Amino acid sequence: MSIAKHVKKSMKNYTCTKCGDEIPEGSEYRYFKPGYRGRVKVRRCMKPECAPRRSELTDNKMADVYAAQEDAEASIRALKWDDEGDWADQVRQIEELLTEAAGTAEGLIEEDEEAIQNAPMLEEQLGERRDALEEWVGELQSFEPSDQPEEEKPEVGDLEDWLADASEKFDRAVEEALEILGNLAV
Image 1 (cartoon, rainbow, N blue to C red):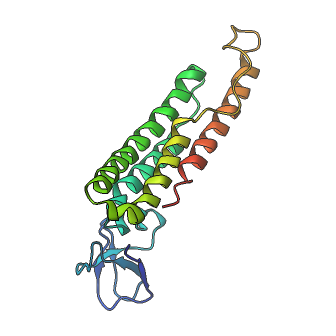
Image 2 (image 1 turned 120 degrees about the vertical axis):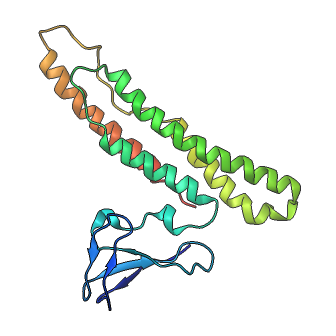
């Protein structure tokens, strides 16, 4: 895995490879070299949104899994409670995002299984990663919000209270999903 390095004072002008802003001489920036023995420096400005993602710092097969995790986290964070929507439909959006991330991890699990079958000496090297991914996929697939509205969407009378309650529980479901996504320890 590459390490992002921090430069306090640039010696010349650069351009951020993420946002395209100029990094003027004398300003701070960060850089990393992707790939095994990477030679090309990827320079980024110091804005938080330009920080390198974990998937960009990894040059092995886990990069796709990390990217799927990061994309799912970003998509779930972008979800907002829709007063017009149905609770189950909105939770289904979270479940679909988790399922997509799990699918990417399952692909790598299959590759690891095949590699181990072809070369049993890789069991020690790949077995731990495979087991961790399987556990993570199980958590993603078993996602179920801990709290749900007590009843279906009421007609007019108690609608305002129900919407407030459902919105709060939806926010909690989002936090639970993000916690599960963050449990990838490989």
